[in-house]
Length: 64
Image 1 (tube, rainbow, N blue to C red):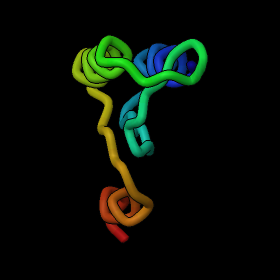
Image 2 (cartoon, rainbow, N blue to C red):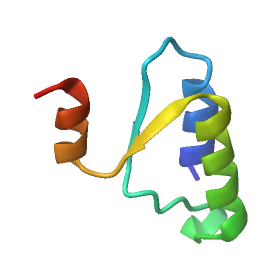
Image 3 (cartoon, one colour):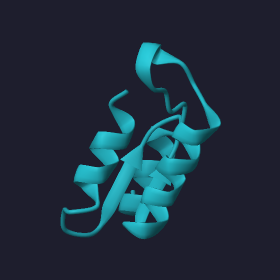
Image 4 (cartoon, rainbow, N blue to C red):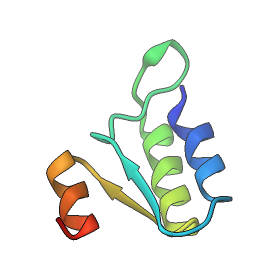
């Protein structure tokens, strides 16, 4: 239930914007749904947010 509001906030922050998450977007009742995932993906595209799933990916993103 936190992913979408957090991504909405992130779209308003300075670049680079990175979302480090396994991507299991849930909603009310901590239930996954296609609409939740679709909206999160839309926010990433619209907000130019880079979605990374692991710490290793994040470290590579940082150039480490």
